[in-house]
Length: 85
Figure (cartoon, rainbow, N blue to C red):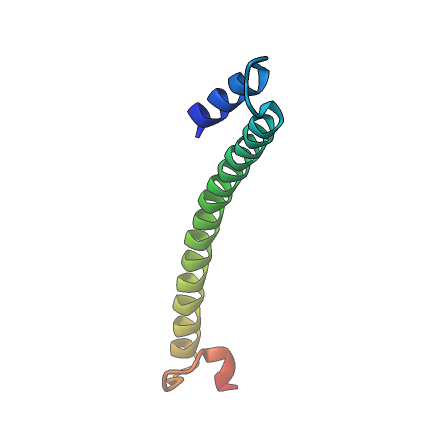
């Protein structure tokens, strides 16, 4: 994409170009796509990190609920201890 943007920018500045304005628009749009994709990639990594942390918290909550149910001397029959009452 960087090469496409660069070549369109070059052609938009060429005085002998057939459609300088169109090449300039394409270069601008390509630059916007590059910026957006870079942002989406960053968000994907952030979302993955959050998902991993969320999973770890959920696993720890399950462990704590199981320990609580065991400490109460009963079973929750597949339900979280907080739902057992």
